[in-house]
Amino acid sequence: MCERCSELQLVSCFHSPQEYMQTIEYIKKLIASGDFTLVSGNCPIDEVKNANGQFADDIIYHLIRCNKCGQEFSCCVNTYRGGGSFGKGR
Image 1 (cartoon, helix red, strand yellow):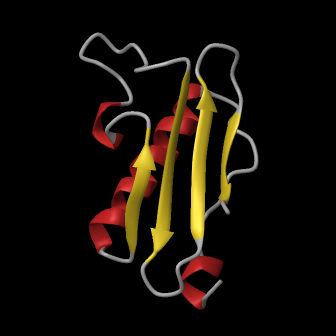
Image 2: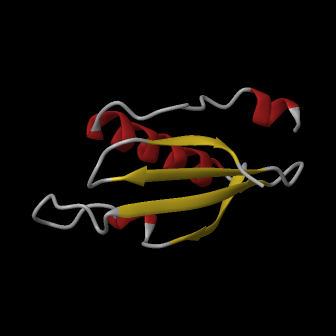
């Protein structure tokens, strides 16, 4: 990990849908800054909720990578049962 990665605001456990949505907005800002790249996900990061406010799937995940050191971070949430996190990936 580099100095950029060590400053990330990681979340060990999502306690509410709002906390997850705040984290998704944070990740989108990281990507927009050019410091991180979206590597994969099971839905577009801008479409975790549809127009009716329903989540795209029961399990939603996204993987981002630091453009400086290559460290990956994953964000995963269980929208059906609750829980999930944003933390260091592979």
